[in-house]
Image (cartoon, rainbow, N blue to C red; front, top):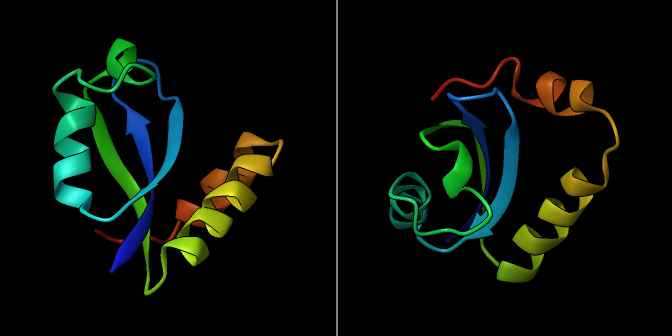
Length: 83
């Protein structure tokens, strides 16, 4: 199983979109400061996730979400998501 995920920073309310195989492990890496691009805004909370059977599908979805130019598009996507 592969995942795309959206994290929200507790520091400045920014979003981070990523993909991975082990979501729990990746989330812990983000919050422990071991991911260069996110350590500055830790701690993070999981705002959204989707699962995929193939890595290529997860990466394609990640790229699609990252191509959205408006923050409101991401907020619309996560609005009804329940963890």
